[in-house]
Structures are given as C-alpha cells and as structure tokens.
Length: 511
Image (cartoon, rainbow, N blue to C red; front, top):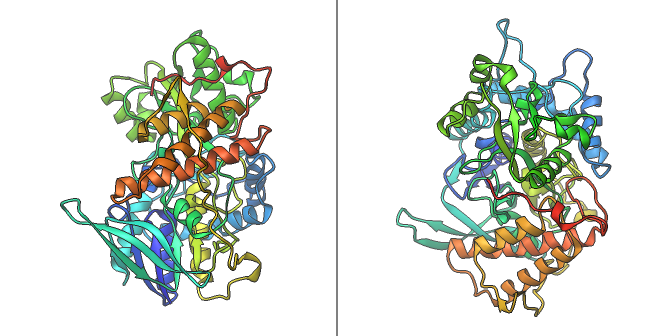
C-alpha cells in the first residue's frame, strides 16, 4: 500500500516505521521540519513500567478514574496491554531512559497515579530523547519525507479518503499547492493548543488535522475536554513546569504559605490535573496574584540533576527555585477529543486513520492521566500501521454522509456597540476567557456568536496563515458548541452554576 503519514511526533513516526517494516510504501508529510511538534517538548515521561505491587490493571484503573467515567474500557485495556512492548521498542530504537547505578529503570510518579510507573529520559527531556531516536530511525529507513508542507484538506472520492491537498513552502516562504494520492492517510497532526491565548503547545498546533477531517465528513467527539496544565511558569513566554516536580514532593502554596489544593481534593497537589488547575485559578483570582510552586525541599543538586531543563530555564528567568518558590499558572495543554477512531486508529471515513492527540481513541475520557499521551501515541500508532490493508469495518463507515463542518449562521457578535474585527489574538483571548477552565452558558453562547460572525465574513484562505485561522475558527465553533451542549460539569469541562459568581472565573494574565 501507498501510505501517507501526516505529522512527525511520536504517533506519526511510530506509525510510519511500523508501516514501512510491514512492507508498505510510506511518505511522511510534516508541517515543519521532521520531528517538529509537541513530542519534543514533553518533559513528562511514558507511563507503563510496573514495579513491585503495581500492574497494568492498576494503571488501567487510574486511567479510568482520571477520565471521570467517560473513558472507554476497551481502549484503556489496549493502551496498558501494549504499553510494555512499545516502551521496549523505544529502548531498542535508541531512547536512553534514565536508570540507576545498577542499570534498573528509574520510575517516577505523577498526579493521579497510584504507583511510580513512569520512565523519563534526561530527567525532564523525555520527549526530546524520543523524538531524536525516532527521527534517526526514520532517516535510516526507506521512508520519503516532505517537510514544510501544510496539509489544507483531505482528498475524498467515492466516500473514501484518497490522498491529501497540501501547500509546500520554499525557503522564501512562498507556497505551491499540490495533491498527493494515497491508499491510506494516517493523521498524526497533534492538537489545537493555539485556540487559546496561553498554551504550552508549539506554534504549529492549530487543529489542522481535526479541521480537515471535519470538512471531509469524519466524526469528531469530546472537543469540550481541553486539559490545562496546572503549572506553567508565570513569567515570560509559557514554559511548562513538569508534573513530575510535584510527584517528587514539591507543593503548591498561596501567599500565606498554605497548601490550598487540599481544599479541593484529598490528594492535594497530586489530584487530577483539572482539579489542580481550577484550584490554582480560583486561588490566584482570590489573592490577586499567581500561586507558587515550592520545590525547595528537594535541594539544588536534586533539582539540577532530575530536572536539568527546568532548572536552567527558571534560572535564566531570574528564579532560584532551590531557595524560593516560583510563580505558576495554568495554560492550555492537551486536547482529549478529536477524530473518532476505533482501537486500530480507523476513523469513520474509509481510508483515514488518526493517531496521537488528533485522535479521540476513548482512552482519556474527560481528563487525561499524566504521562499517558506519549504512550497512547506509540501504542495506537503501531496499531494503526498493523491494520493497514485490512477491510474497513462497515460499522465505522459514513458512506455518503455529508460533511460535518457546521455552516456558520448569520449572526453578529457585538462588543458594546461595535462588531469586533477578527484577529487570531482576539479569537484566542475569547476562547481563553469563555471556553477555558471555568465556563458559563452565557459565555459559550457569546463565543458562538462571535466565531460564527467571524467565519461568515472570512475570505477564502490562500496563505498558510489564513488556512490556520480558518481551522482555528472551525475548531472554536465545534469546541464551544460541544461545551454548550454538555450542561453539566465533568472532568476538564467545568460549567459554573447559577449560584457561582463570575468572579470565580478569571485567570490572571500573568503568563
């Protein structure tokens, strides 16, 4: 088969390598350079190595608990069942996970895990180590790579995906349109962090794969579940402070030095991410300034050895976190929803697979368990490659179903008496304010009015930036619509009740 893999993070590179090893002709198309994307930024590790008293069953139970009852058990079982093989494969491909003096893998613990079962590489540089190893493996393999190519749409014929439409940029920034045919397309384009004014995601995460799938007619789900990482350094550009720091014993304190997260959950700093993020946002709003992460009890030598990247960046920004707490705040981090797939990565549109953050596998439910994302990318990337060439299940086919891209309604969004002009920054701020950590029905309706007006007045995109804006607008409408449709609160989706005041909602603009 002729297989196109769109994206070059852990999910896409794993899928490409497995597909090539199975004898398929593989081409990787990536928006930036090979290996660009979110994987290389991942400070956290890969869950799935079980020590004494731990097991895959307990990992599954923790994943289901974090998902707030909305994870699919079969998907979670597939994740933990295949996890050991995928971690062993990463080691074989050259990922040097951290080990003790006897050569035994070091295991860390992060929030909502009942045991230490997470492997890291280079302390807090796991994603970078994985990306380097997989990129090197792809370079050694007979895999074609097209870099700096923006996939604007999927090519659909007779109810099935037959290839992609892309814009290829040259060194001068000019883009040339081109179609590329394939027997199967595997989307591995990541999430949509740049829907929000503050995010940990690199600049290219503009929801391109999900938007293209929507326009083609593939089903998407769970877009309302956006995970905000609790601890981003509240000084300068967004920089993530790994959850593993809290797993090692660091605490969150307010201006009075009190560990306030225990007011929200008995596990305190190791509660699920949605709980910790909301607790931080509320406390920061109440005290009029960011809360702080106190890691001083770990000591300078431990911090430098265990978290070398974080240690370097915090010091570059003027903080000595070994002697004093550092200011932190939440930021958009991970999208639990996406293109609906089965356990082999097949979407509802024949010929289209989706793996990694672009996919909604059912693993994460309403809230992702820490360090399951890299594992999911590896597990389902391999599973998708193994399913190439298999008959497409009739139950997942949409047949002649029309595109699910919602047509914008003819409404205007008014800020005071003036219609607000569109800009990406205006959209991101609106999503941050109204479709962020704390949501209201009124805010969601206002967001839909704004986004629909912007979409209605938008010209046909021509440049890569204009295509990205169109994708963000489409995803914003779909996300706000999903959030408005889910009236209750669950996991990362939190709707303020009538009894709660709007003063609970703002997140300080300190990121």
